[in-house]
Image (cartoon, rainbow, N blue to C red; front, side, top):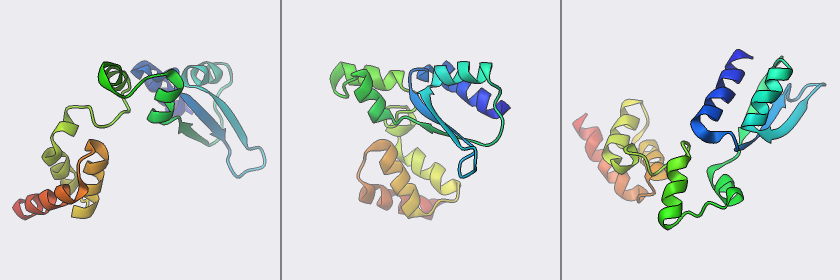
Length: 141
């Protein structure tokens, strides 16, 4: 319960208070509950009713949130939306350096294929090019 409360407080503090989520308690059990609310509402809810049992959180995705909030993903509005959304990939400093992302993935034990796929997902770059770069990096490690 304490981890759940800390997680929700951290999400709220990170500027995601208006992000929707499903707060699921005791899934697959007789007294299963699913509550849909925003992160800030969940913080208040757990302040009033103590968390007991097992929980699963399903957080609204970035694209869905941007669409619902009317944030465009092009030009200055898109850049502002990415800067405001701490969960958005592709605009942070690390995403501009695919070699560093590949090296990190390989050092974490990912295969060349997995590291290339993960980096492609984060940067939007061509996976085949990243695979070739990851092979060269692997040879040098």
